[in-house]
Length: 253
Length: 211
Image (tube, rainbow over all chains, first blue to last red; front, side, top):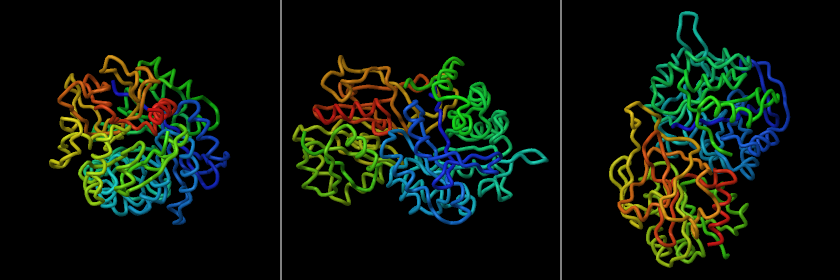
């Protein structure tokens, strides 16, 4: 069976962990390091850090947070937000990140995907997609945490990115993000059926059943969980046991 | 116990490998110096990304012979991910590349279809358990773990040793058997990332530094 992953997504406005709704209206929740270590001890499968303001203000703040986390957290760490070059990516890998999530810079310069894939490997090149449904159907890719239109069609963009060497897709539904009403299953299904690389469902997790649906109906092989964990609406063991009860293969922690 | 040298040649998550070994109690040295590598007490060869790129870095830094020489000393050796794949004779990733040739066999792409013909994702990313392919794991890296312990894999290619005696463990992917660990005497290679496999991986690191 394909093993499914439960990933804690920590959006950061350094030095704080933050959470919003539809990627906006951000609230400070505390020290991201503390949350990451708790989830690690609870048996989370991976950690994703997204620096939510880096691409807007053109500065990098995530490096120190990754470095401190990687000292004691021995699971895969993905870092993103403001990565604009191979050197930015290399710096994050050097301090302990395993994968780099890229959204805005990849949309502006798609060749960055192939540059990173060819020099650092496809396995570390995670395409981050912020998708918003269009009134006329389909989805448009946004950047800068859902603040900027790009005009790019999500389904065309993910196929192009896969061909350029992306190794994984972090697919965030702006419509569902922060609502706890479940993932956008149509979006997940449309993307996962068009690419052969793993798709991480993000945005809307509010129950274990939502995660189960993202995998069974949506074709995702991983779910990103944020507010549902950060606000202690659930726990890592509860999600893991729930997914196992639904018949999915999860890690025995 | 001595010093554990990690080959620092520009590929692999060296920081995390070092931190995991240190947490397990090792004294760690990062090095790309041929003499330091050939004369290490124990040696770790990490590696991520494309096989050919990692191999070319080893060649450029004149590290192929020092690593072969080290393995010939029968001191403990651990190859991780592409570092494990490079223990094989050759890889078919983006062309045909030679390897260290410690273990007979080839590195090939993982099939994009399951045993039942349905597609499944490649790269294979996630936590998977292993199946023992030797009578016992006693005396090896896996002595302190059992088959229920999942470890973290991320790979599109996998080693196919020609002699089953070199397979320490494999791991299932939708009906296909994937080589998870290879062994020849003192040299062990693991396809997964022990430095990213939580407490199970740390127990392997503890065992490695006690070998």
